Image 1 (spheres, one colour):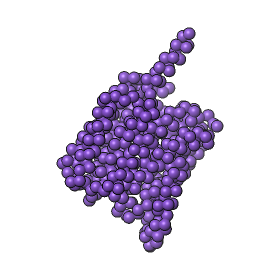
Image 2: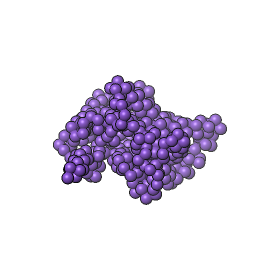
Image 3: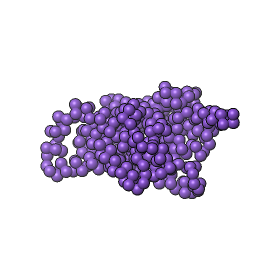
Length: 372
């Protein structure tokens, strides 16, 4: 196994407050804004891309599409890793055992999250999809409770009730295009998405793995995602895929379909990379808070662009209530992280799920041992 700690100081992801000259406030703010805008661009872009591909273009094969995206993402990550190695950045190598028991579970959860999300877009409108996926923070919190990464509290349970109440209002079938099958799929995607980020949290903070750079994480997680979805794609979509009009029609339509799927694969790689890069360069708090505004942008754009995206006053009230709950969750987490470790360490947090108090206690124990 190669030295996995090297990416922390080499060509990997630098963190604020690390060695070297401290970054000015203006430079730090500019860097964060650029990273957030990149994430917004790829995240909102791939959401509308998937909606267009599966609903408007009529390519009803979300699982097969996701497999192609993950395989392409893996290939692109491999090329970037070779490029970084050529320029002097060591490549961390994960053992087969670590991959199977530590990395693959995060990939499996991620595959279910993305696969179910893409399937749901065939039936549900973008406002409903966005609202349901926003509840991911609730499931993330519940899984964190189960794995003892987070301590239960009254404010946090209040946040969960607020978000769930807003979701109930948003589901009112006044003007939102509602489909029960699509709703179940997107809610299952939110559940697996919460599990995905908890497991990813454990992977990224496992010192021995050395997967601190976004490209390295993508390289090892993407194959697990593709392998998870491939049997389902083969069983559920293979027969219809072969006979699809996109492959049995004109040559032009075939080329457009292939080009569109590959374009989505590039978007998927850029989204995954920008997501991990934003968290690595700033914090999970930044990602979560920025995500609230991203959801608002997605819903606003979908209402203006897509014909099946209409909101009633009751739907807007539910949306607002849930977003208030999500904002409250992020405020609680930010306050807790800031009180526990200070702003400098908040910038280095990944999805703010690891146990801050235990980390401080372990450091105090090391100081006591040195004093003795």
